[in-house]
Structure formats: C-alpha cells, structure tokens
Image (tube, rainbow, N blue to C red; front, side, top):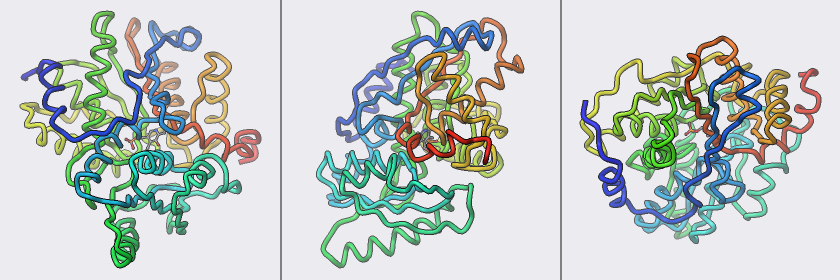
Length: 357
Ligand SMILES: Cc1ncc(COP(=O)(O)O)c(C=O)c1O
C-alpha cells in the first residue's frame, strides 16, 4: 500500500478554502497518574478541547473548512441541528458570528434535561443564535439525517423568502448533505492526524488513538490520515450516539468519500474500522453513575475536565479496555479529548446525584 509524505498531503489540503478559527497545534501531554492507575505503559492526551473558539472542541477544527465553504457559496446564514446540549451547535454559532454569518440552530430533545438555559444553550443565547426547539420522536439516539434535513429545509425556505442565503449542514459537520457536498469535517481530522504525526513521530507514534465517535468524521478523518501516512496506529471509536451496526456504515462512507476526494491510492480494510459499542450506556446523552465516576476519577487524578456526553463515554471505554488488558503491555495510547465541556453545567443535578438515575 502506498504511503504519502506529510508535506505533500498538506499541500493538497492547502487548496481547500479555509478560515482561521483555532490555535494549532493543540497540545499533547502525558496522563501519568491515570496511566499508573490503569497499568498502561504510556497514556497521552491530545487537547482538542483547547482549540480556543468558545471553550474549544473538535468541531471548531471542522468549521474552518465548512464556514469557508459557506462563504465561498455566498451564504449569509448557517442552519444546522443537534441535540439539546449540542457542542457542535455552539461551535457553529461562535464560528458563524466570527465570520459574519447568522446562526440558526435546530435543537432536538433527544434526551430530557431540566436545566435548559445552561451550558451550551446559555452560550448560544449569549451569541444571539436563533434557536428552535423540536421534540425528537425517539430518545437516546441521534436523529435520522432525512428527518432533520426536512425540518431544516422548511426553515431555509422561509429564510430565502426573507431574502437570506442559507447554508445547511448536517449535525457534527460530518455526513455530506445539504450544502456541504464534500466531507470537509473529515478533511479537518485528516489534517489533525498529520499534526499528531509532526508532534509525535520522533518520540514514537501511538499504537492506539481512542476517540468518541458521534457523527463519524473525526474518526474517519484520523483513520484515513493514519493510513495515508503509512501508519499502523489503530483508531478506535467509542460509540456515543448509536449502536455499532447503525453507525459503522456512516463512518465507512465518510472515510471512503474523503479518500476519493483526495484521490488517495489507499485500501481501507474492514479491520481498520474499530468501533466499540459497550460504553453507550442507556443511549445518547444519558449518563449513569459509571460515567460520573469516570469524570470524577479523571478530574481527581489529572485535573482534566471531561464532558458528560462524549469524552466521558470515550474514557469509560479506554479505562475498561485497559483494565481488561486489551492493550498489549508497552503500547502507547493517545486519548483525543474532543471538548464539549460546557455541557457539564447543564447536567449538574445528574452528576451530583447519579445514583438516583
Ligand atoms: C464534544 C464532542 N466530542 C466528540 C464528538 C464526536 O465527533 P464526531 O461527530 O466527529 O464523531 C462530538 C460530536 O458529535 C462532540 O461534540
């Protein structure tokens, strides 16, 4: 299989329109106390929660390409959807405001929360985003793309009638659809993999990258990036939205679209797509006492703040896999902290009384 020079790959990516939103490279550092607790040789974290835009997170990296695409299509409004405490929606609203676009956010109640004006929603209100709430038919799952786009299209038609030029993009900036015709979210994580390579290739690349996988592009981009660089690094996604069976085709599709968009001569094998299903708990956005324990343990051992919906479930997976000796001794593990921490505040009653739920 062919492998590519990182500089060559960066040059290809330079051709895509991009706005500057994030501070790069994000830091990588050791989690020594946690590594000791779990009996791991080396455990590192890449701090994508420190990208810098509106409390940071993986989505601001994707939005550098997505907002540039919206601007090149002469849009003046961006419309997207997410769940109640969607970090994607917050990041989109912040990026849109910074670049002079109007943000319209459709928030589906895919889980119940008592504190609505907290966390990401509070910040979206401070950004004066136009927020529309909708009831989701099924709880604990992400919304089907077709159902969400039907809703977005109605809003887009009304905006057009008022003289606006809307740009619609799917949840998480992952699946193509609406006005995003290319896998731009995954492109951002392809580039992030090159960043990891530049940071770690001298000291040794990780054997594993563990990451929360919610709408698919972060995992897909990292995986295609790793294989394009000729690395054996396993990119393990922890399912946080839907079951593996439902989710796997989406991740594969995004990865193949990205490979084809970049005209890479790569074969992605079935075994490359690693998705662990056991840490979803009772469903998307639903937390239990195990999740709370992990959040507390990581804070108390490392002072590292995880979020309740994504990174805490990904870390639950990492901890369980380590305790079950799934990683071979001496292997290097990189945990990708994808952000989302403002949601903690909206879950405060559940976090402080997790045993009751
Ligand atoms: C904080 C956070 N972490 C991880 C993810 C998962 O990333 P992706 O949607 O690219 O799978 C998301 C979004 O779904 C997120 O908001």
